[in-house]
Amino acid sequence: ARTVLAGLDGIRTELEDLYEDLHRHPELGLQEHRTAGKAADALRGFGYEVTDGIGGTGVVAVLANGEGPVVMARADMDALPVRERTGLPYASTVTVTDEDGTERPVAHACGHDVHVTCLI
Image (cartoon, rainbow, N blue to C red; front, side, top):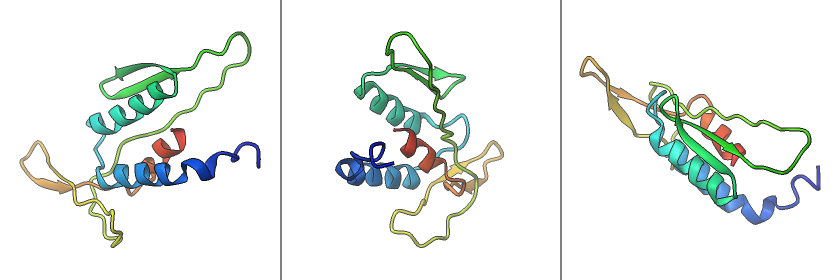
């Protein structure tokens, strides 16, 4: 585990900032344009070949490393139509208007903000 986590201290603050940003700006399924953009930009920055817009908001990234085994990692990005009541300083205050014109709260109550952060 020491080898796998060896660089964590050097990027911990950046990852915490990313997590808090994603948590503060949740998006419902098929509306995750901001989140997908952040993931795609980060993966491009790491040298991945990125294709975005898959199924609307999906992102696929490939890091070519020659012949041999292939590893796939996956992260969900969507949030839920619920009000956040955690009291966190980075709690979501996002609302969306649904097709009936009703304003709905949106929050990452499912951990998908952590999924994306861990992927990156």
